[in-house]
Image 1 (cartoon, rainbow, N blue to C red):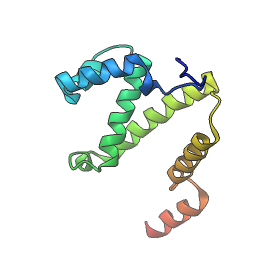
Image 2: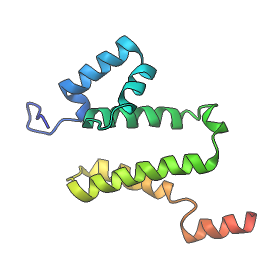
Image 3: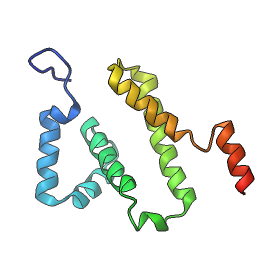
Length: 127
């Protein structure tokens, strides 16, 4: 990865590959770019990050069409994402800034709702 002037590693979004992909997105549209990316067998790191950003956008805005998707399919989607991140962290063991690590830990803690003992007992009671 490139370094900026201070020697601090920059984000993938600061690379020329990212800027090229964004330019392509603006010229052909995000839906067409999404189709191009998912029709490939292998994605670049930049394409993976763009795809994750797109997924965060749709899942975060609570898209009306996604509300019609069976819960099992959404769970399978999340499972696939978690498997990908597991492999990245397992293979790379990246050094993380304390703020990034704190953010990731908070998001992971929030995401354990439903699998920890306390919330599972709650879910059994309401079921």
